[in-house]
Image 1: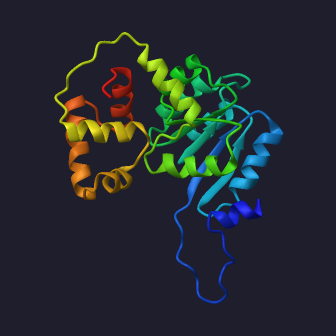
Image 2: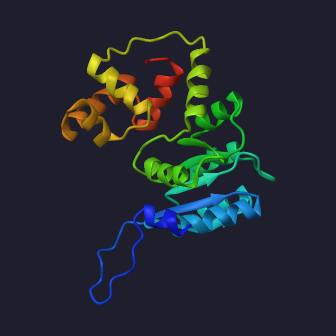
Length: 233
């Protein structure tokens, strides 16, 4: 755990002058396995910039906290939970707090659960066997607008959508817009897309706004979901 903290930049607080405050990502963990829940929360709380002070054994308690006005930047959510299951919980979480990003953290990687989770509004899907470093990186990635998935899950998603019979629609995307959309599907954020294509951040932002207009969506998640569903890649 100490090695993980050091890897992600944890240092001793300087004496005397105050260090600049680092933006903190509020992370909630909804997991009914007591040991796994507390182990993950303990590790996350030793990583700079992450605060996992809210943990819940069921979806209902987390939803009640949202109703009361509590805010979460990122929620790690199990699929199989007592009472309201994780997939149904995603829908309610997004309804109560649209800006909250949800990462499914589960032992299940079957097509049906992945499909339902994404359609319900999940922004990422990781297996519990993922290294803790991967979970930490995914929290930061999804908070920055990415869509983290393990390679195994990503392959399942592509195979799943590839079997759908929805006809491909021509939205008039240019070759550049098509490439940017493909990189979005891979989970890259604006700066990473700009670096990979040797474009300015402003140029990528302009292309993204054009993509949203042509696809008739308003968000990155909406564009990615539509591209996957209609096989625009």
